[in-house]
Length: 311
Image (cartoon, rainbow, N blue to C red; front, side):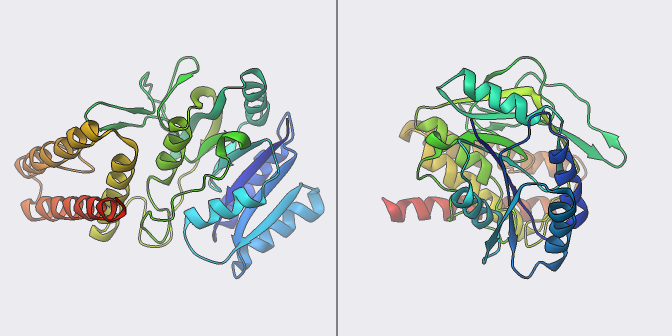
């Protein structure tokens, strides 16, 4: 079984160097590494020259002309030739047995369409080492449970995977590509959720195995989707993406449940009425809480209008 590792990157040469070095140390070498870069990203091309030429790492460089992670991932899928496409971020470093475990899982189960694993997050000189048994689930309310970076236990089926560490059987992907309707000029939040849920919806098995691990060193994101300093525009974009995905994947009844749960309750990230009130009562700025709520509901309404227009 041929494994292609797909790494989209943009102007993060130090992170990319760490990622490529980790791929060089794999117990089972991937047959192909596809790095997706923009033509004018000189720092990335210099980094690739350092790794590919002197160290003979089998890298194919795929050039993408437009910004955004969705375009880069789609370009990488088109360029990949493997039976399995293993996607990781440029700021992640796969552990030495990563490719070997991925290949073994897909070889053992012909119904396995996608496989994810734990990303051990390194922040401020420490590793987030919490433990969660519930990972990658869509609850009846529409609430998303992630926890991919904290998962423990054995391999089990999940509803969605995380982009820093997810692999797909080529047959399960077929003509599927990452959703170009998703908003944002950089990360286009929730693109991994949409893609993995589409594979599951097509009847394939999605597994999460904490032993299929990468070390993740979250780096700043370019564009209007910053990682740790959200703007109202990025909040609105993320809410649009979340609701577009939910409206596109849930049954009609489940859509209504999710719509009203997010409107009335919500989460700290996507607050409804309840979480907005709690944020203000806990000593936060009432104005900031209301502004976030408006951005979230605005994105949600725009997603519903977009789906209605397609009906």
